[in-house]
Image (cartoon, rainbow, N blue to C red; front, side, top):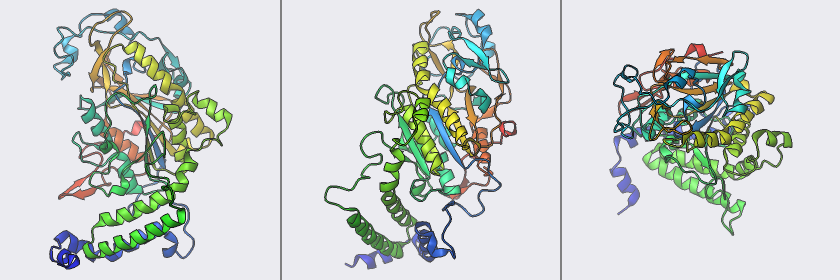
Length: 487
């Protein structure tokens, strides 16, 4: 039996239409891999790929660095100052405040919900007197560059659906992540690095905390070339980046050329667009063999810069090292850099654990903002900080004057944004005395994502992809731009 003849006999409707578009697809792929072939003049170092007509309007931000605090940091102990709660120590949360709102199974069996005021001191900082906890001394010095949003809210109350929700616009897996949407919509600004890079930060040499699944930086139903590329902290930054023993660069090039011929032949038979993605990814991997080692070599950074990020900056995989790496990625035109750090899930021993976590992230976060600012990059780099939801004012487990835990709280929590079209030095939104409900200016996570896209010149209602008969987007069928956050 002839396999090629068999493939033609079982050709599907999708393959038929794919083949009719093969000429266009091949031309598009060729222009991506070698723009000079399709230009009268040498191709400028500008955006490659992306959708026609995007950005929809002049962007303020060219790129995003998202510092994601996985596990949900407590807004009550860092940003949302509630001095009146000192008089409520160990008193029960009033039913009128909770108002029947959903709670997790971890505290639903408690006989009471005793209020646990923060043990940390707060002070006002910056021109507008933003309240910041003592656990964030470095970040406190840059509040005039931040927009602190106290009223972010979500419906998800457990970690995995909550992180999936804010990353993809749905609590159910399978949708493209925010970075994948930007890669799809805006394309890449560097032919030698992925448009979307993910960095995982270690804590005390390990990761710990809630598991993070690859779908959080996945491409969903978009082409796989839009998914995030995770850089590792040991060995090759990307798996199999180095050539095996006995394989030279010239031999690798020849092998890829022959493989591309086979893939193009297969594409001409079945018209599957994923074959094009495969060719493009092989070529990207080849170019990354040179670009990634240069990226991760920080030996050329000044002592002033390294000192700014703190003592752990030279340890690969630490949050400090990843923040510096995020700046280097931004410098090289990477569209979306996601920096994860876990172990914020503090159901018990919160005062001790949050002080440790803040000690890890505080100085590098401030250094990243200052570093971008000194290099003239903050104006067109959007930096976002925060987690998937917040923490309750009531205690989980035993309560003492010096120790307590907090459960998950999706109704209101704090994130901050800086640079890239965001109004600096403001506090947006107001919560009640218990940091339990929003009183003014709620910001749903769909609103947050709509605002992020706005900074990048994208109308969130128009960045869509038709899948299984429906138009999908990052903000689902919701979301409004929060104009008060925009510069």
